[in-house]
Length: 131
Image (cartoon, rainbow, N blue to C red; front, side, top):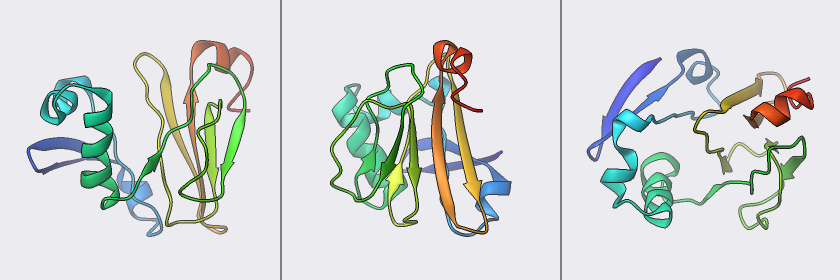
């Protein structure tokens, strides 16, 4: 992992994903005080994430339900839908998942240049969301 700092925010990226050249990836941790730097509320955290990580664009977050539904994101203005994974063919779109004690996964196909981000909670893992 590579440690970054910008606008008082610490985050990490994964070098193998960085080296693919078609996606930006990032993760924050509880100890990086991301929410504190954002003002504490979820909406303020999302606004800060949009600025720092997505160049001001909206980061699409599904309504995570601890299941196995996968949503294909077609455009920046897609409605938020219940899903625990988001598949993207357009490299210009920003997607994410939120985790606490669950596992965030970033699956990337370097040939097709597609990405799927997965929120793998206990229930989703038992239901084979990553199969």
